[in-house]
Length: 499
Image (cartoon, rainbow, N blue to C red; front, side, top):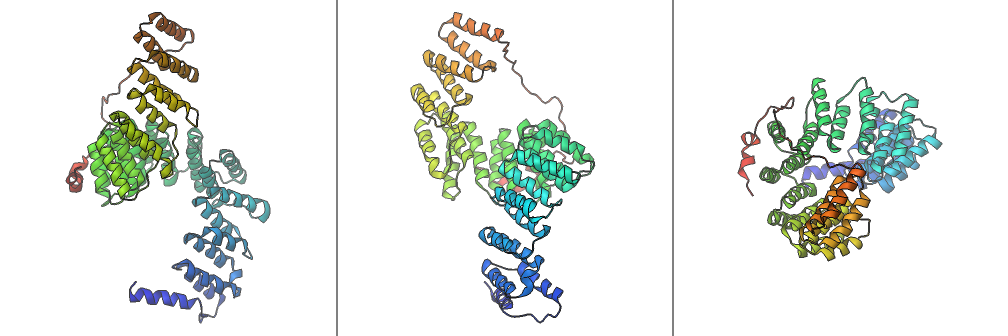
């Protein structure tokens, strides 16, 4: 710390111990408000807190509310912010909005909801169009759909449903909780739409795998004159990755390079993810190494891409490098490594990685069990794969059963394949592919009569296999606001780094 900064901090510390030469009360309030706002650390804040308590200024709702906010901004939402709030001599809607908002944005959304209930039931304070969005976001964060619908009803009852603040929060909540159709109904009913509302709807379609509807919203958004920025670009990159629209994804990447001197973390991750989903791993890798900041999502996206494409050595090299840099792996990281092991037949490494997941604080999900079962079945360890499935702490899904059945077909294990395929049909009786798989197992074993019986059963149950389809781009289309430019023309740094 240099001398100037030291003098400034010392001055701030001294100011908490001495009375300022200010005569009017409003000037005194402004003075302490400024001190609270610029407080550099919790220690300084506690001295200001003590000073306010020894004067009548603590009774001022503006200063005490500001004290609540500043404790939270110094990561002291519990216990300091909450304690100050409940010891305030007076609380108004401004105070309640601060404490509800701080918990809504923290890792304790349930506490935010609890505070809202206290406000409504005991305090006699009515929510406004700033309170309700905070509560709706807390409902989204805690997965409380029924409560969110109740708060929606309260918004309508109080006449706040037409507020852009409230409408955007409602769309965000329904999108987050998977009710994309309800979100669209609200979106269409709004007579006016702002940037937040448009981007919430676009992000909702992108996150729920509806690229065509997302593109439609984006075109309407551009026609409405909404300015494009990196938030819009992130959603569009997700849409392009889901649909395999490589040319359009490249045009967004080129636009980002023209618009921003450096790619932010979210934007860089979105570009890497788009190239991974379009199976252009060389581009994904180059973008990855030009990012100034990387998190576990950056590493895991690229690792998963290489894992699913069977590039085992690169996936493992990335995993080792990530651990060396001190980045904690997540569920996607291990999925990429297990996928790479399954494609490469590295059973021992897969076993080792699967066992170390708990050590890294990651609980295996169904997709991890399915990938591990696939690794064992591909390698011909069918009995171990079945035993692994039976010892699972959760009920195996169709992916786990299907992986073992595929392995049985590959290694001509008729008895096990028949047994597990029947389980698969009981689990998903409406899926035609399961019947076809069982029929193929019978046919491979020379039991053509049994195979025919399965085919007849499909007809009796009116289960039909959908014909295979291939998507080709007959006519290229452009995204409004994004002219096509190959990103290689936009930045020398994009070409300068090769793995």
